[in-house]
Image (cartoon, rainbow, N blue to C red; front, top):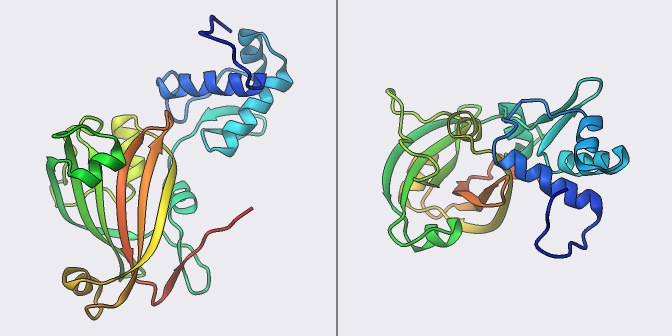
Length: 243
């Protein structure tokens, strides 16, 4: 398993998981590509297939890989469906999930402010791109969203010819820039709609909104996106299922 800088007291399967995750983060297996077989990986690391399988099971639970019966293990790949069920938690009153449609208002480059630097672990003066958009569910404007990403990770990110940024951003991050979002940390609080938000969402000024402050992380556990969403919950609610 190679030279270690010091004793590693983690279980062996956890060490194997860390090594495999490093290889994913380095792009050795791009999203959607098959990993070597369990037998081959177990031989490579000099461990039992049971140990290797336990490492892969944990990686699957963290959505780092997809395991397909009879086909093998694949580096996880984003899709609209995956984004919907893993990262979009606003649902209709009947519990129905629907992928929102987006209308981009702005897509501008700038320098990170203090909040963006803190959330994304950036230096003073670091370039960022900011996207402001409104998201619709069943043609009803429901979410006012401000997104900030590091310029170094996402160079030349800009609106398309029609002024729109792709609807499912995590797909685009992965396909165009090789950045795979695997987890996010969210903070929620109630806020009052300001003038611009109220106008865009068709609400009276001061209407209650649910603010979702999200920082998204890549495979290497580095923050890659700050997203602040202000959501009307008049016809929707935030669903979090705890196991």
